[in-house]
Length: 226
Ligand code: G5P
Ligand code: MG
Image (cartoon, rainbow, N blue to C red; front, side, top):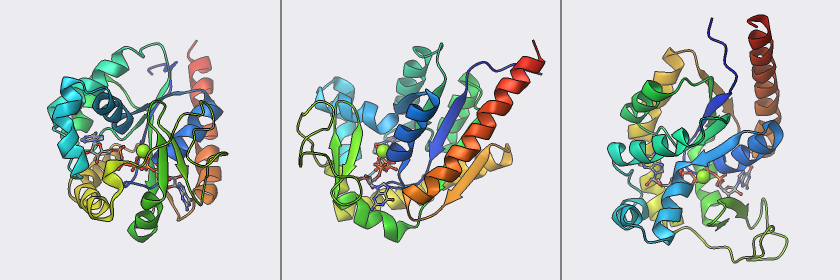
């Protein structure tokens, strides 16, 4: 049996399902590093890197960026995190990306947030983000302490260019066509754990209980193999 010292997980769900919000709670509770593909792309866009400039129009139009580009970028970031357990958010989003991840790393579990599309559309138009850290707010659900400013740094918050109603509709279409097959891919490997609901605060206790069990069984398994 393979002894796994480091816990490696993926979080999936449609745009606006709460991946960033739940990731923040998971990483704080379980001490995992968080890597969000969307955050990595937005930091590149803000810094006007060559890659950021090339990817900007894809993202602003609600389309996925090419598999080879994002796979190279994310796998490169993960290789710099070899010594840490991590939670991957927003990648993989297509079956070829899932295969590229599988070829490089072994995944312990995939947390899937199953939130209805109607719930999502209202959320995204009231979202504000702190770009350098990826911290996410919402004017009704999770407002910043001072309107328009990040709680930790006091820096200004911005709205994402892809949070307009038309672009959100395109992102949901891309999710249906390109990302839903990834759920089947992980289900067939016995890795998928789905959490259904319309409110993060109700979904979170179930995610917390599941990961607590999963992590403690991993520690026990490792101990039995020493
Ligand atoms: P991203 O950045 O990965 P999406 O579209 O997958 O973007 P997004 O929009 O970041 O996902 P989320 O992280 O699932 O959503 O959700 P969130 O930010 O936590 O919550 C959304 C809002 O709802 C927030 O304001 C939050 O406060 C609020 N909220 C949370 N829970 C509740 C609740 O219970 N109630 C209420 N009322 N509100 C709540 O990807 C962006 C783009 O990058 C490219 C693509 O172009 C993509 O469209 N990209 C990739 N392309 C190809 N391959 C990949 N792997 C790619 N990764 C990124
Ligand atoms: Mg997100």
